Length: 175
Ligand code: IMP
Ligand code: MG
Image (cartoon, rainbow, N blue to C red; front, side, top):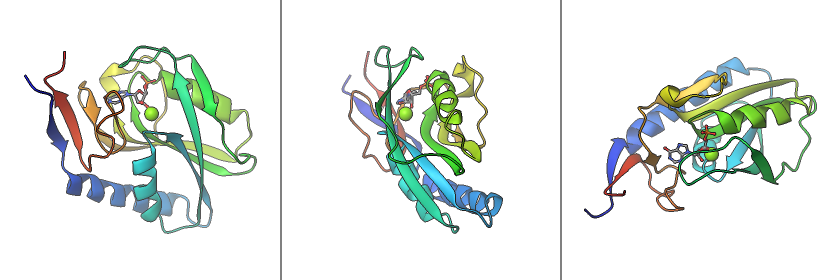
């Protein structure tokens, strides 16, 4: 069977949900500036769309982590491949992720970031697979809860492919 992508969440549905999240975040952080932290590369599409839907002052920074593991699951040993440019001291930090699966990556990452003394730190993810959770991570904003399927699109990849799809899909026809 050839490799194909089945649509799980349509483009307009994703856009609508991001708009709702943006409104909620703007309300929750009213009177403040929110410092968005993008976990590259997967989080970048979501963070850009989300930032455009936030109506309070926003600043952004980017980091890249690699967690040792095979292609589709993480080991939880997180290595910072590219660190943030700015300090988190005194900032209201919102970590923006594409997906939380086992929770291992975020568990370690949040621990590292908390030591940098932000005023507050919350977590926002486009997708959440709660069934897969191994590490307990508190998620403050969730776009969609999804079943235990390997998804692509909107920043998420399968072997570096499909990040550019404007919708969330499931790859079919792979072993
Ligand atoms: P965790 O440490 O198991 O929570 O894994 C988090 C990372 O694994 C995510 O940031 C993604 O990069 C990757 N990942 C987990 N599930 C999927 C998926 O369904 N599609 C694509 N990447 C995924
Ligand atoms: Mg990621």
